[in-house]
Amino acid sequence: MTTENPFGETIYSYSRAQAIDDGVLADLSHVDSIRQHWKHPFACTSAVWAIIEEALQRPDQDSSGICHDISTMAKLTIRSTREAEQIPFLILITGKKHAMKLHIGPGDTAAPVLTLMLPYED
Image (cartoon, rainbow, N blue to C red; front, side, top):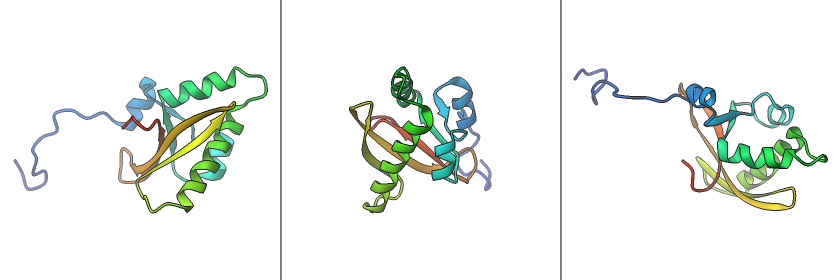
């Protein structure tokens, strides 16, 4: 052990970048409405992405509109809660109610990132 790392050598780590490459997370930072609403990198879990993909099968839906609705509901909840790290909220996507949570915290570096997930996901 060293004074630099009191817990010893890292045995295993899994980075956010690896999770995006593996498809465990879907990077939504490139979606116009996400870039308009959030200044930090934004990703969602594969389970949330499956909900979005299902909605995209409808001809009246697009990813920017769905992400705009998600962002709006998350921001409304942020304004009315004292929670700082995980923001639980409800969203209607194609008429179906979904419970989601938005997590903000450090990513692969100390810089903040946003991750959209289902309530039971960590």
